[in-house]
Length: 316
Image (tube, rainbow, N blue to C red):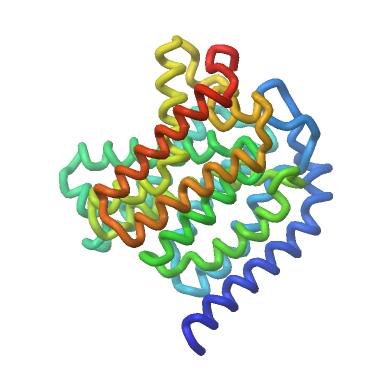
């Protein structure tokens, strides 16, 4: 079987499997685990949540079949996520689970001297602290950005599509997320919930840690994801400057303020997805300097949107 045909079969089967499962799960989750609208949310109607269970289960089956076991280490965070979707567990438990999961991933990857995790932990304690800080930040940034229809699922499809040239095991998760996006696009029928966003954030971290070019490889992937991460970082810094509690729920992210000021969910999500698509081209065909340059242009676009189309930060 040709490589192209193998990719096609993996994509189609993962897409169809997830699509069928979601058709069955949406009515069940709408009844058992509904996302109830609140003043901090961006939706006005109760909808099913925890839809991430669909793409997680299908992808893990494919990953095991491929002999690619790295995604299995993200399962702990998925379990924490679905419990949180239902019962709202404490931040302390979430952080402990994240740190524990990341340590396990680092030790697993340290068996391969080609991984960035191995190369950075050679610097000892500071190397571990750097990886844990980067890992927990990434997991929570992905979780923070999962607030409107299609934003995280669409962005992660583009990110995984780009990274597949390096890792070669990501076609099934692209297929499962594509099926999920069909139901998650505006107006959505289901949300991925914390189970989905925590899994995706943790899996993305594991890919960053397993990249083969040390800090250079890490920076390239972070720049690819910069439309998401810059929103989260700038929002965090602005809340600190304005002496707002950074741990409280809010609607201060740029994507939230754009929607609050009247822009459609689908329009905002497409801005982020297309920004990542542009970075994907430079990630694949250009160098780090140009990738920095394009990320800077996207930052300027964000500033323009903030000034001209978003609800004022002070009113959010």
